[in-house]
Image (cartoon, protein in one colour):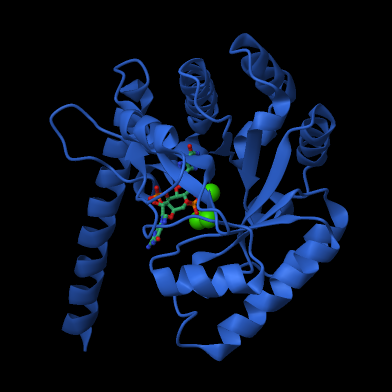
Length: 279
Ligand code: C2E
Ligand code: CA
Ligand code: CA
Ligand code: CA
């Protein structure tokens, strides 16, 4: 039994060491990612389900370290949040996405909205609201063009500065979006305490939609609450025409997912906006 225990321990430490080394490797690389211009933005269209017109896009960060494979956000965003690196990185994301939107505008395409993900450490910055306002102004964009997506984790945080920041954003006329709705613990109470404009129905409700009557019931209830509170609903993770049709029938206004398009580089997104309607 002693031997087994020791083996388990060795196995654990080897595993832990690998995890820690990997984490350190990512952390060190991330520190230089901005200066080395290794960060890239991809865009995923958000589609009006009744007309199939593109009404917005979500900005999704990618990291391409020199000589290495592309690193997906789930592997580096949590580390960027823990280390605070998400603050300068997030500032760049907003600036670059606004620059890109202004460029699309200049080409005469329809004025779509930009949805940008924002993390807790960014919302704790006392000058975050000013930074957002100045960035939009610098690129000649009106405040209503921007949607800020936050998850419930942001609202679990009791920090008063966060509430203050969210209120500041609302006052500017920026749209506040509650991401991954339905996956947290107390989603409904947040709706009472914060002034959201958009509910993003989590992908987990959408994926089994065509097979699972319970998911239809839940989505119908979410849409009904949203309608009564004058919130826009965006369904995430739509992967089939069937899911799309059911959601449209249930009264969901906007959808996003691989069925319409995967997240794509700016050039491809520009072509999609030019087409206006998703084929
Ligand atoms: P999220 O905000 O929930 O973003 C949606 C994720 O779902 C994206 O993953 C997107 O590629 C994926 N997705 C979209 N449609 C479908 C679909 O039909 N099926 C499936 N299976 N997946 C779909 P991605 O790009 O890997 O991003 C993962 C997470 O990383 C995001 O989840 C977000 O929490 C975070 N993230 C990405 N960019 C940023 C950023 O600039 N700042 C911050 N703070 N977080 C970001
Ligand atoms: Ca999001
Ligand atoms: Ca989401
Ligand atoms: Ca998520």
